[in-house]
Image (cartoon, rainbow over all chains, first blue to last red; front, side, top):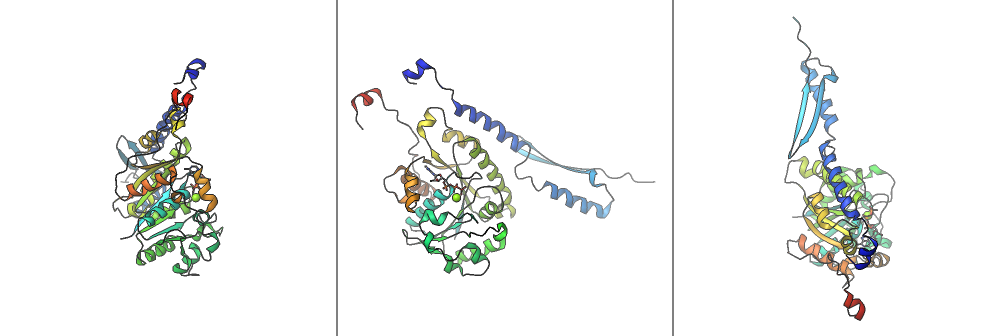
Length: 86
Length: 271
Ligand SMILES: Nc1ncnc2c1ncn2[C@@H]1O[C@H](COP(=O)(O)OP(=O)(O)OP(=O)(O)O)[C@@H](O)[C@H]1O
Ligand SMILES: [Mg+2]
């Protein structure tokens, strides 16, 4: 640090702020599985098509969700089957 | 065996075309038969940076559409014996690049015995950028030490990992290299710019080099001579190092430290 900046006050180190912000946003974008997860809607559509061949399900009752946990991702598929009658 | 290398970034204007030109020239200078392809359909620029703009007759899309033979469209570089440029088309039709078409051209270059195919990606995450990385074996993630560039590089890494042929076919993933460009050691020292270590820590991709911010890049583009040919400049040497590291050689990082002129030096001069 130079004498002048000591006298007149050091400018804020903006690079450190940039790094901190990037750490947060990158973690969040990975967390929301934005990364590489654009196949989810299609996967959902195809699942509905396949399952409908065997049982009649309501498209809203099939939920696909991708979640990132520390080092791995969890693909969660939730299917609510209609109650069997009789 | 041919290796396909994409130079990509997500963000625009970070130095992809400058890097593609220098890197492809560097590979050719090392004796490898190299083709460099401009994927920036509609906004062709690589021809200017390579200095071959007046020799463009046919382009990438003409070849894909069967309007010209690949060998007619390839332009021999003026500086390197074994380097050829495939210019982008100026068409505004964004769908002109088809996956089958690009694959056909790459296969043909393989048959012609090319060692390396360097793909200069357009900015963004749309079709052109995806086509440029689809067939990649290796990727040079070009990043400026700046927030939006780092974030966009992170996005493009995700796309590389999901859309490349290698990942689609479950083969060994694309080999990623981080190249930090337009680096200013003084501004890093002053705490105004992210350091290359910060960028590497954020993106977690092995570093292949750091290219300093330099006026010589403008001189190079003014003349249509890839920056690697400007002997003795920092940028040229930095690109030579990048090519050497790419080829598996060890080279210490240069041009990353700022030497603050000491008081004595300032008072009494000296180099
Ligand atoms: N190391 C450098 N030092 C100084 N200027 C540079 C450096 N690298 C690139 N530039 C300048 O930055 C600008 C953008 O470079 P370039 O065209 O290579 O980027 P690009 O990523 O290909 O852009 P686009 O996304 O538009 O294709 C140019 O004016 C170029 O001269
Ligand atoms: Mg470009």
